[in-house]
Length: 93
Image (tube, rainbow, N blue to C red; front, top):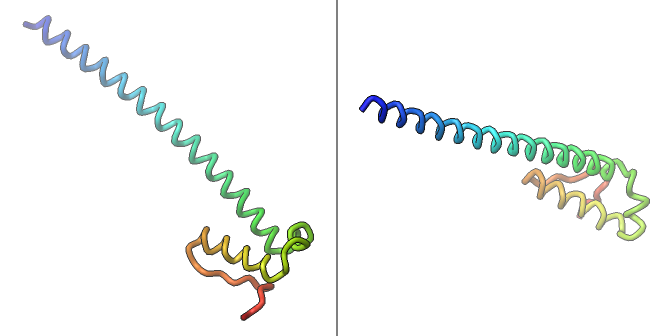
C-alpha cells in the first residue's frame, strides 16, 4: 500500500514537472512574440512620425496628391489608435 502511494506521488510529481516545463516554454514563446510585436510597433510608429513630418512626402507624395497622402496618414492613425486624428498639414474640407 505504501509502495503504491509513493509510486502515485512520483507519477504526480513527474506530470507536474512536465506541465511546468510546458508552461515555461509557452511563456518564453509568448515573451518573444510580445518583444517582436513591440519592436514592430516601434518601427511603425517611427515610420508614421517620419511620414507626418514630411520626410517621405517626396517619395510618396509624387504619386499621390497631397490631400490623398494626408488622408492616408489620418486613416492609418484612425485604424491604429481607434480615433480620428487630423494632421496639421491636412486640408480642411
